[in-house]
Image 1 (cartoon, rainbow, N blue to C red):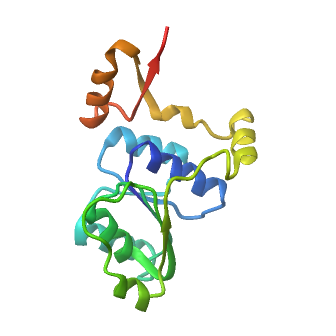
Image 2 (tube, helix red, strand yellow):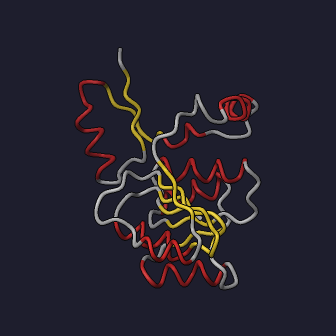
Image 3 (cartoon, one colour):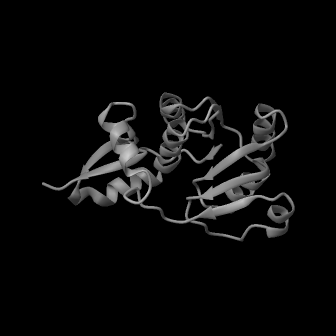
Length: 174
């Protein structure tokens, strides 16, 4: 289960597929990102948020919840959603930079949910597996770069990403 359809969330779809996940659910409200998520291996798209989104996940998991959740947004609602869709004993990876209130730890304690996260370097984890998959044409994470800007236009690039006009902007220095 992946919450967030930015570059990190979309790459989490790739990682889940490489790790052998049979069911890959992503919460996404943007049609271009939904198409890319499906291309990368997502099996289900949930555009709803809040209780309605949580219920859709529970329906897809026969009421159990997700075994693993990648929270790739970092806001309070996405964190609460991650806890709500996690089955008892699940793991939640927080890759979205957290801001807002902390999680109600009593809920995670009594449901035996593990929460971990932080910046992780690809050079540290799975470098050989990922590089081989890219070189063999199994994955193409570069598709998250949906526009290119000159260095002089870097502010416009950030604005386009902020306004969801592009997923990730490549900056050319020439």
